[in-house]
Amino acid sequence: MDEQFIRTQMLLGAPAMERLQASHVAVFGLGGVGGWCAETLCRSGVGELTLIDQDTVSVSNLNRQCAALRSTVGMEKARATALRLSDIAPGCALHPLAARYEADSRERFFQARYDYIVDAIDLVSCKLDLIETAHRRGIPIISALGTGNKRDAQLLRIADISQTEGCPLARVVRKELRKRGILHHPVVFSPELPRCAGEGDEAPPPGRRSIPASGMWVPAAAGLLLAQAVILGLADGPADAPTPSR
Image (tube, rainbow, N blue to C red; front, side):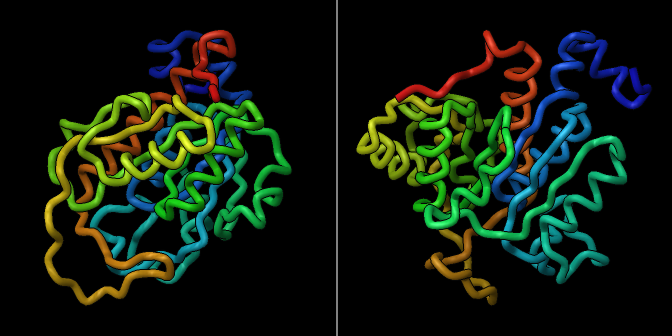
């Protein structure tokens, strides 16, 4: 065992580490949530990561995103994340993809075999299609719900979508998944009611009406919980890993 992962092996066991090393995880969205999730997966010994985000690093990302450094401002987030992770774990196979996941182009993102998918996408239509596609193909997937305009990381939890409350994004996703026949789906969410965001100078990206307020601790904590679910699911093996249901 590589000394880098010896503490993780002490926690999970050698067979689990072998499963993690042989696993391929796709992380869709590399912002304040997905970026920290990807880094945790890398540091925990996952052997292959596909890193997907269409955006570039901006100065306003410096307050919360792990790939956001002064030296990476203007760089594609997928590339910046891959550069950071390659320095952490050179043996991890990294596939950065600077692209936006959409229904019309979904096949582009499923040319590889994934053992797990992390959904940290912001746009609801893209999120719903990714969830539905993963369920249909039998690929375990977990989604992040709203972390913007929230301040209490202690309220975050891993739950089934049917057990969510208080989160406006959860309400929409739960309703739309039900229409698609998906009644159960693992998510990370917080029941904390969003606070009203103050005014800012940053313009919202296409498809968004506003920019949410956000510090580092809530989205980062959500990313760590996503990674926990994936790591333990993969470490426990196929028989015990969460399986999508419709």
